[in-house]
Length: 267
Image: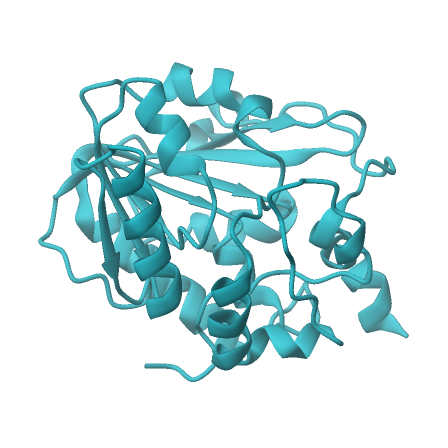
């Protein structure tokens, strides 16, 4: 497996300011610590719950608009998030979660069983090499997990080839395991001008649209619909971006440094 990919997340100097009472964060000394697999095993050993990019209540309306209760769902990088539990409470019971950390997987399995959520499956797996048959899921969802691939990307306008290769490998796997009319949902800080060139690689048949959520600062909720790609000549008409505001100051928890990392890289 690529040595850099193991539950890496954007970092911040503000981690200890998270007010979630269920959180016992093991804050790293620097962003590069997120590239160390041992950090994540250690963190998940002591931390019970942490939510990246807002909790479910902030984008629940978008989930309900795009996922049917009958859908089979794959969550990439579950960590110790409550996303799968919230989906389950909303009636979506065919859920498979993966994470590369064995500690995260074991603790998630125990937590779900203790709450009686026996239908949710949790599997140790690499998002770069998904161990599932083609066309297995109606929905693939990730919340902050793909942002891991950009921690060491360099120039965000021209990311390192190694970064692009990993992102495309992840998207290849997602596209493969989605059913012909399946959707990929990506919840991220990544702005459209950075994500669009990757999502719109010619090998993929999905369309791309997005919504934003958050009070002030915007988080992005991308929806990629397999088999629905716009024709190039109609791209401007049917795939235009909504108007958004990008430069507010609603920043919290470990989201902070990823928001400011572009400026830091230029120093």
